[in-house]
Length: 359
Image (cartoon, rainbow, N blue to C red; front, side, top):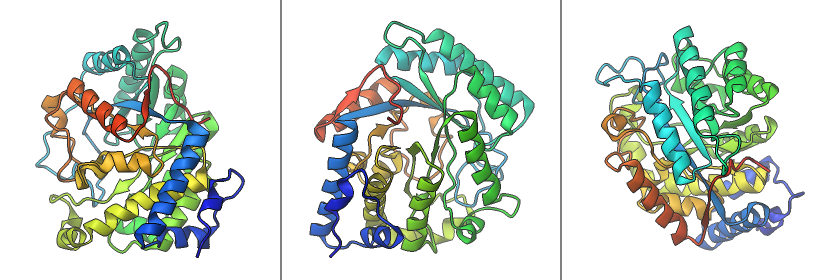
C-alpha cells in the first residue's frame, strides 16, 4: 500500500510510478486518505483562503477548430460576439468593487493586429480604473487568449497583465493530435508557455480529464509536465461533450463513464497538489456541471481558486465550450453570493482585495 501521507511534506514529491498509483486508487478509504493529505498540505502552505478570479469571457470569436470545443471556428450555429471595451472595463470595475483581487479575460483564439491592440487597451484601462487603497496596483489580470507572438505577449505584460493561462488539454502528442486538426501542433503551444515564463508571467496550463483514449499514464505525464514547466497555476477539469463537435459521437461512452471521470478529476486535483505543492489550482465550473457540489468537492481535494462568472448574462449562452454549463442565467451578483456560500460550506474563507499569486 502506497504511503500517501508522506507527500504532505514539501520535500517529498511522488515519481511517475507513484503518481500512477495515486491516480489509480479505487477504495473509498484510500481516496479519502488522498483527499485529506492534499487538503492538509494546501491548508499548511496556503491557509483556508480561496481566491476569486472574476471571469469575463469577452469574445467567442475563434480561429481554431479544436474537435472538442463548442465555439470552434467551423461551428456556424454559434452567435459570435465581442464585448466592447466599456463593457469589459465596467465588468472589471464591478469585480474590484466586490473585493475580487483578480480577473480573468478569456476569449477564443485570434492573432490579428486589431485583437492585440484591443486587449492591450482593455488591460491599460482596467489597471487605471481599479487602482485603489485596497488594491494599490489595480486588479490582478490573468489572460487566456491563446497562442500569440512573443511581441504581443510582451505588450500585454507591459500593459499590466501578469498571469497567462494557456491550456494544452494533453501533453501526450498522439492524444493532442487526436483532439485537433493537423494545423494545430502541441510543440508551438509548449514553446508559448516557455516564452510566457521567460517574459515574466505567472504561467498556467491544464488538461481535460476523461478524454476518449486517455490513460492514467497520460494523466501522470500531464502532472509531470506541469512540474517540468514550473507552472504557477493549473486549470483543468472533466471532459464534457459538446453536441456540435466531431467528438460528439463519444457522447454515450463518456456519459457511461461520468462517475469515473468525476472521481478521476478529483484525484487529479489532489495528486497535482501533492506533486506541485504551492501551486494555485482552480475548482473548475465543469466539476459543477457534472455534480451540483462539484466545485465544493474540488476545494476539499486541494483546489484554492474559483472563477465567478462576470460575463454579461445576455451573451453568456454563446460561450459554451461544453453542454450543461452552469450559471448561464445568474447575474454576477447572484453568482458571487452562490459561490460565497459554497466556499463557506466547506469551511473555507474568501481572500478579498489581493492578487493571490503563487507564494
